[in-house]
Length: 172
Image (cartoon, rainbow, N blue to C red):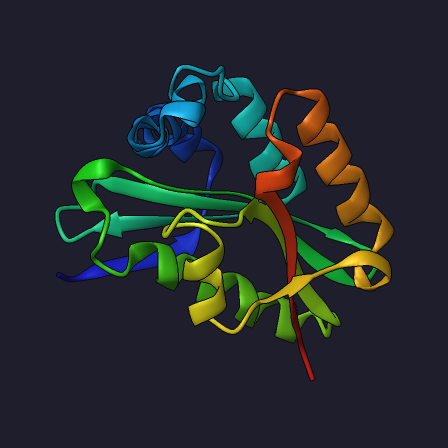
């Protein structure tokens, strides 16, 4: 399938909540995480603010339909991926991978030291997906403070801490 990845514009924000909700439907496959499929997602205005203040990319299908997005921000010389979502109708076609690769390329252009994220350890579309792209699991003292803070905030929101992990991709 043909698609393009590009930087998001404020006009794209209206489509992003529905994409995130659609992507979250995958959590219904895990009975302990079903609640995430019904969780609140950022609204259009929050997405507009993110597009104006952070690094946000979208992927468009061949018919110019927005199919996914990645939102990240720079923290301590690292690009931290906050969210990666691809609509269910477009999953499994390489769009998520293309979004992550665009973020990695931007981090290299910005001469950042790494790309980081937090995710679920055992879900195939989470940690194993990122490992295939070269990300490594971080443990203990190797985990930067911003990732420890992110994990703690997720636990406070109800995420099962034993299933969460921090990952990074060092950039030469």
